[in-house]
Image (cartoon, rainbow, N blue to C red):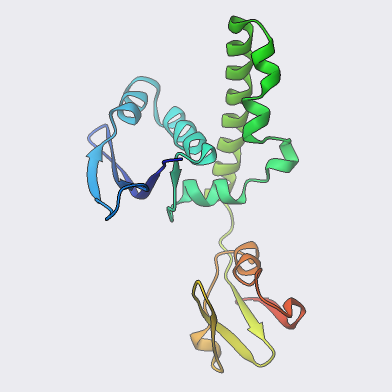
Length: 186
């Protein structure tokens, strides 16, 4: 399924601009363009409605591979706490209801997810910033690539993670996980 790879989202003069490309077009055709859908929401409903809409787009998977607070908030959102999954929102049980009732129930569920995502997003951007590093025996994790880890004997070269969760995720695929320790920067 196609999705938008988003490098940045910018608001200028009441308009929303994305720097992005489609994932299914090779080579990638990066461009900056005004997203009129988002711009209309910003102009008619305000910043909060825009934030909720962008969050639900990331949650649905229509926008991915970003390194922004929207993506990070969605990545750290625990669906199991709220029992939300994509299929629970757009389920077959809704299709068994009459069409108007199904649309109303689906919109209600989407709005509930939007609200919880938005609350999580606000908590995420207002969180106390933490800094963590990973230690493997007497070495410090320096770099994580798609195929390996690089280590350094010097603490000053350790890779710094924004949270313990991100540090744990970085070494999640490693063997001997029990040998990795997580430390908060003083």
